[in-house]
Image 1 (cartoon, rainbow, N blue to C red):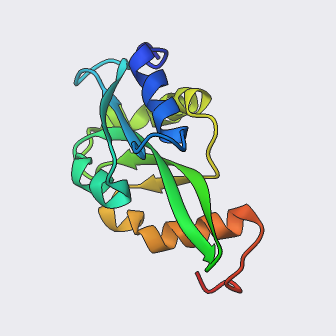
Image 2 (cartoon, helix red, strand yellow; image 1 turned 120 degrees about the vertical axis):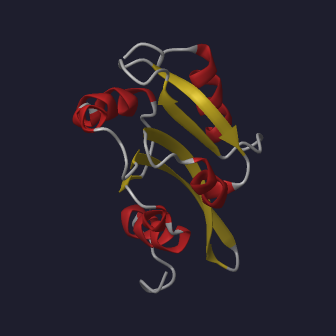
Length: 146
């Protein structure tokens, strides 16, 4: 997968993972309508709500996002999510390459608690994702109530 080792993707990944940087998501898209080259498309500070505005229904895209949530009144947790977006209008040949493409992306965006496969923006409900993160993270201070 050419493009995944670009300095722009590495810098964006480091920014999302940093406690000192406000960037909390990055979006990787295909560089052209054909071929497997990927590029950093965007980054942002507005969380999953902002991510949803960036997704293209005719594309396969990869999102790496930082999600912060409260465990209780005393503490918050930070977890990372990999979202594999396959828009409902994506061409068949592009969809066919997702298993290879996502495998390569996972090598570069390696540190994540859960993977979310999405084809509709409703699949990216922040409360649902936080529930999944709590289950994946072990300690659940809300008794499973999310």
